[in-house]
Image 1 (cartoon, rainbow, N blue to C red):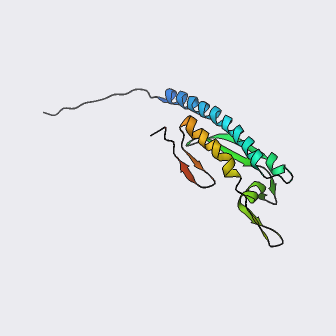
Image 2: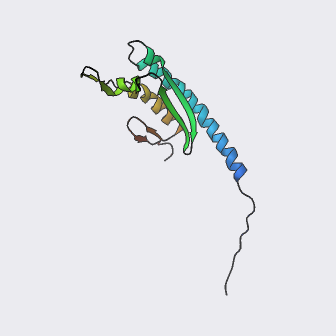
Image 3: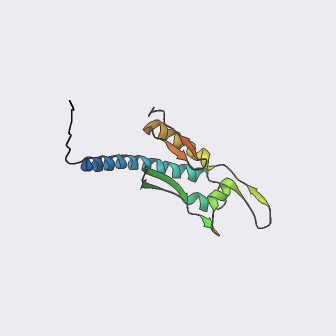
Length: 140
């Protein structure tokens, strides 16, 4: 004897998936907007200030991606194609041939922000300065 089962399915969950996706992105976006502002404040305070231009040039952007919602901090102070914030962070050569040692000020400024995000939201994220993946213990 052969048993055959036939299942029929009509419709899909497109509307539900769209609704939940918008809801999730809205929550994440609002959450990340808050931390974006805190990060800008922390970076402003931590940035070495010769003229103050680099310190005043921090911003953030929250954007959707295929992997979720991303928070990026940016610095718009660019001189001759080089981002001054990164020159300060990583160090650089000068026209006279000397080397200016970098000052690690970005990572210490953002570390409390990273920790707070992990603690309050249970999110995994990648630290772009080190490519280290921070995994949330809340998801395990």
